[in-house]
Image (cartoon, rainbow, N blue to C red; front, side, top):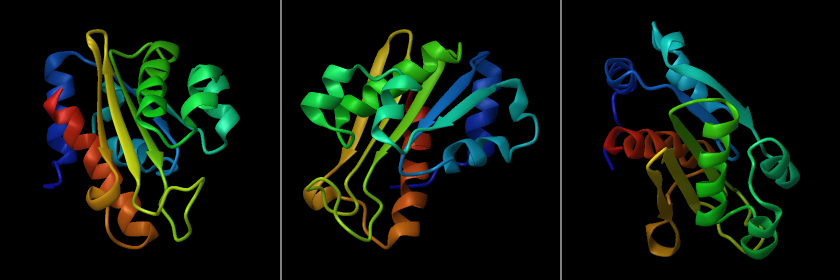
Length: 158
């Protein structure tokens, strides 16, 4: 997976007149930090929420309780709901979300490297999952960094 150029991602958002909001779990703010490291990003970044705790995925990111009860916090459906929820709640044209297991230990039966990223627009939600043999490799920091790259790559395709 090739890492997108963050400055180019921000430039494309500016050119398209789009704004972005971020809901992050395993990345703990790294996606928003990457976006805001680019000069001029204040023209497009609305804000972000770190929703490490499961209940905050519901209360802050807008994930329906039924989704969390049925699928849990580490799921494609949860990532999709996080992305759309943060988009709506923060008034952005695009919402991004990250959820998964960075490690070193498994969580709720999911091994480290299990990751779901999502991009939501008014036209729908796209999710990319890294599970099983396609799980993201490496230690905790490598998984977190790869997750940032994965959600930004998905954004660049939207």
